[in-house]
Length: 180
Ligand SMILES: Cc1cc2nc3c(=O)[nH]c(=O)nc-3n(C[C@H](O)[C@H](O)[C@H](O)COP(=O)(O)O)c2cc1C
Image (cartoon, rainbow, N blue to C red; front, top):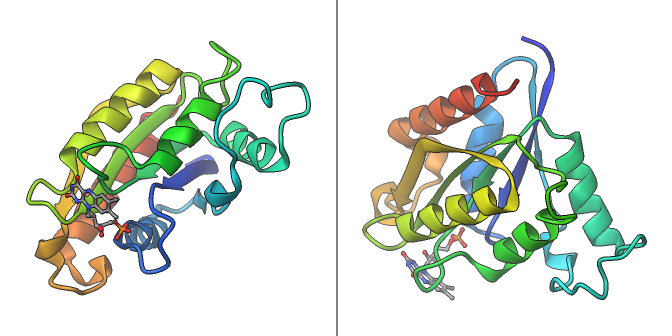
């Protein structure tokens, strides 16, 4: 397989985030030749403001857009907040959607997965994240779905769940296969 970069965006800033742990599972399951880069600067990205979106955007935005530009695909891993997309992730989508029609993820394959406490594992947030990234210009792979109810993990790291590890590996494999 040709070398590929996959940008990973995590919608939780919490140190002990289950979604960050899912990102660790994704890194562990990456096929040979595929490098996953978990972007760790989302907390520094300012709220989207068209007045800031000039030729000299703030450095954290430049870093986010550069990481997206370097990527062949993106894997978004997010919890659900109040039935929807966590603000930190929505803010990243808004920055990545500009310049309109020429954003850094334009036409690149993108999958959305994640975990949340509720019984549907954050499915509302995942559906809305797919919708929003699609409007922002990414090529969302709609049938790649994984919404993990946190209770199914029984407090353990998701890498302890063979089902979750298999499912994450499956999503990543299909995401990478859709590049090109
Ligand atoms: C502000 C806030 C809103 C939340 N809203 C929801 C929700 O709508 N649905 C849900 O299933 N869980 C909700 N939760 C619980 C999260 O799913 C849970 O805290 C999860 O562990 C967060 O992901 P993380 O472990 O990656 O930080 C909410 C948590 C917070 C802090």
